[in-house]
Length: 111
Image 1: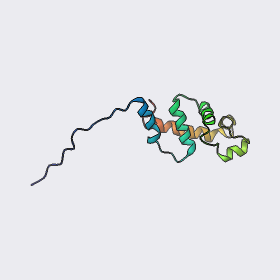
Image 2 (image 1 turned 45 degrees about the vertical axis):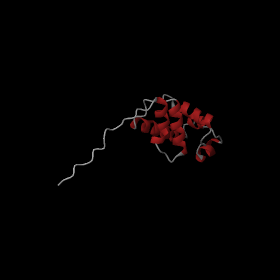
Image 3 (image 1 turned 180 degrees about the vertical axis):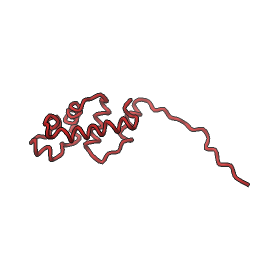
Image 4 (image 1 turned 180 degrees about the horizontal axis):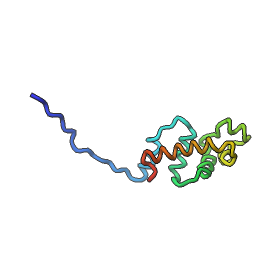
C-alpha cells in the first residue's frame, strides 16, 4: 500500500523589519575581497552614494587599505585620490559597479 508523503505543515513566512534586512545584506553577499566587503558596507549605509562618496567613506572607515599597486603609483593610501586619478579609477569603478549590481540582482537595493 502506498504511503502518502508527510505534510510538512504550513510554511511560516518571517517578514524581517528594516533593521534585520539591513543586517542580512552583508550575510547574503559573500565576497572574498576585503575591498568589495567594505564597498558593500558603504552601500548599506547609503544606497544612493556616488562612487566618489563611497571612496570617501572607505577612507573614513579605514577598514580596508588601498591595493598596493595603487598606493605605489600615488604614494598615497587614499581611495579618493586613487578615484580622482584617471589611471587608477577604473579598478575602483569596476569593484563598486560589481557590488552595486550584486545588491540589485539579490533584491537588496530597496533597503
